[in-house]
Length: 199
Ligand code: ATP
Image 1 (cartoon, rainbow, N blue to C red):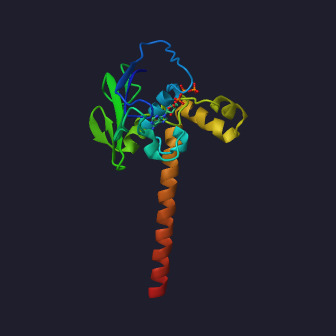
Image 2 (image 1 turned 180 degrees about the vertical axis):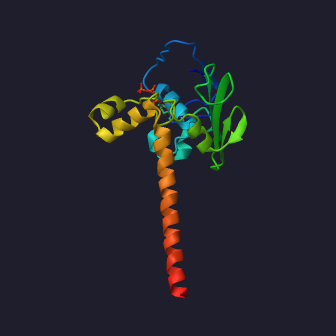
Image 3 (image 1 turned 30 degrees about the vertical axis):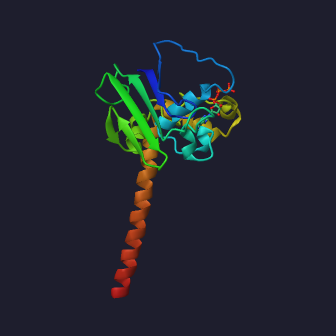
């Protein structure tokens, strides 16, 4: 599995539709300061479900939409699609290629797509569990993040190892199950109280 291409349209500095093709191997993206190199990484984080504007170096989510220049009107929407070659089925879908896409309008209306079909954000997040690709995975390492990982809290580095070892998914499932168990425990207590009052 590898990242084959990224299509960006109306996202941050990319007013026109642009498609980056990545052949196998290493690809370097070079350009002057402020030309949009980091915006490409932001686009990948965003399409994978990033919800924090701050993580995308903005103040509010609308900041991901091209805001215009002196010669160009702002765009009304932002669209990003990333395509993975999936011959070895590491992404658990029976397709040779998997494309995930996200679109958002200034009105706040938004949609996620997997191979052209509408889906929930949750579906995209779960699709990439344990692949190392998710927005919290270790495939995207932003500026300054290396030092953060090396000097940060041990629990934060632990999350990276959990993801690499393939247990992150089970930990997340456990948290969800523990929450519903707690909810059921509280419901049971209420029922017991009501029964006691009736007796
Ligand atoms: P450096 O080498 O300094 O890290 P870079 O090539 O990584 O720079 P980016 O940080 O990706 O550059 O891009 C910053 C540019 O993107 C700025 O010029 C900024 O104005 C522009 N930009 C960010 N958000 C938007 C937006 N919503 N609309 C238009 N332009 C935007």
